[in-house]
Length: 120
Image 1 (cartoon, helix red, strand yellow):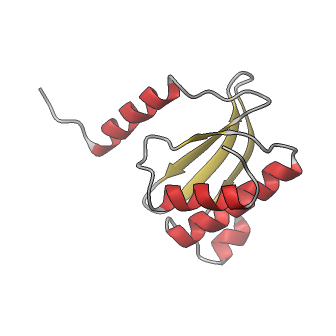
Image 2 (cartoon, rainbow, N blue to C red; image 1 turned 135 degrees about the vertical axis):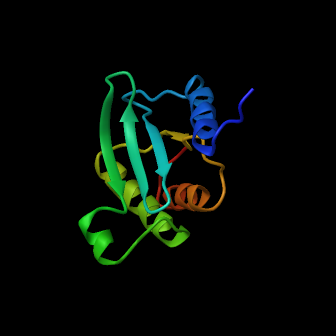
Image 3 (spheres, rainbow, N blue to C red; image 1 turned 30 degrees about the vertical axis):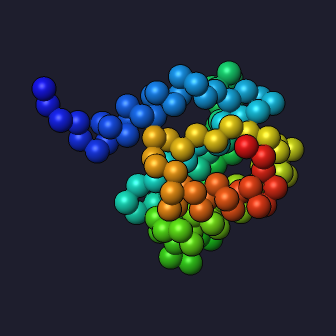
């Protein structure tokens, strides 16, 4: 029996989560992906299989500020995704942590999005 790599274990956790979590047009899924260098956030309608909104540390205004995969940039991303979602008339959603543990960047992003007005 071979030991799973960190990525294989995370993907397995994410698949287990995705069996329970699904986004609709009324209540989409807020999905977080964190790599070693960047953080990506998407709001997804799983029924229509469409990404409604997305934001990442690769965007021009964030790249100029030298944001990377840390808690400060996670807070900014949480505020940005919340403002864009509220502008698109999306307030309630389901949080998908992507198999990552709920602390550090992921928790900071979720808390910032909640403070900015999202409900999940």
